[in-house]
Image (spheres, rainbow, N blue to C red):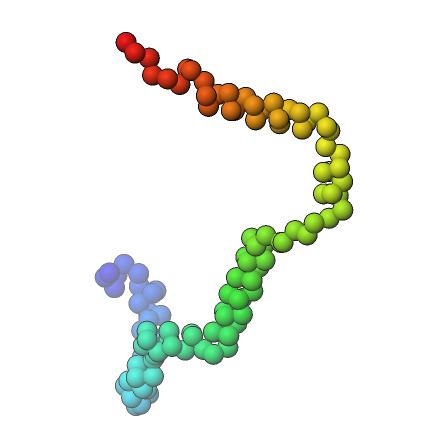
Length: 117
């Protein structure tokens, strides 16, 4: 950019005082660089005792909830189940007996023999 392109800008820039640095500027910059934490130190600070305890508590609660919801509750025999047995129709016993006879007949059937061709 030439001085003739924007004379007003160059006039304003000419009146602005030059920035003055502190005599201790270099020392302060080096101190800040030395004080910066590395990635390992940041990770170690992130895993503080308070965060580990809280994360462990949450993990225990989640595991307990998973076990509680997926673990079947043992059923106890109730009075209703004995009522169901009492309500079985006597005809059902006859059907079961007929099925037993059918199974016995099927086991002794001639259709299971291999044909001689």
